[in-house]
Amino acid sequence: MKKISLYIVLAVVFFSCHKKSTEVVLYYDAAKSHIQADYFVRADSPSVKEGTYKQYAADGSLQEIRHYHNNVMTDTLTRLYPSGKTSEISIYKNNMLNGPRQLYFDNGKLMIEENYINNIYEGPYITYFDNGVLKQKGQYTDNKMSGVWVSYYADGKLKEKVTFADNDENGPYTEYWENGNLSESGVYKDGTEDGVINYYDESGKLIRQTTFQDQHPVKSIAIK
Image (cartoon, rainbow, N blue to C red; front, side):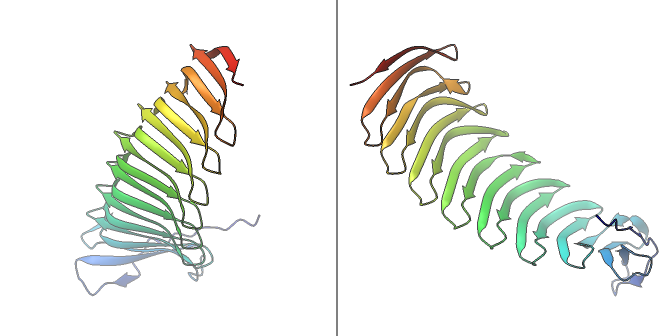
């Protein structure tokens, strides 16, 4: 792999029309032909970023747009694929993720919707297949998976429902075959099966029951 040398030009190269800020441009090369970043700083404090910050790849494509106020990242951050399509849109406050964050496939379809408070997960979490069909939905409470999470097959049919508490599977769950029939049901405790777990064939008929205790199966009965 060819190594690209990075030349950071710290000198002020342009003054903005707004006298309180100064534009700074950083380059990948000594000839100053490939921009690495373009942003603004306070004229009276050159180390303090203020306003829009744009970051570029070595090939010249725009990678990221973010915003600063008094050297603190705030407002909307946008990341882009080399094609120019959006890969991420997220909201920042006080240098931390605060609010919704959306991630996209390179075909433009939404991949993930999530929410943050001070850099931790809080609220709804939703993922999609690259064809736009819902893949999974659930929620976070204080950075932990909680409540009922639901997963789907790529054709939109229900795949699984499972209850979470404290970031682990804790509570009842059901799983389904792609034809829509029930394939498994039971209860999780701290991420492992607990008690009687029911297994079904693709027609939805109960075929086996296995009892779990202390994370281990202790009895299994075939159902005729």
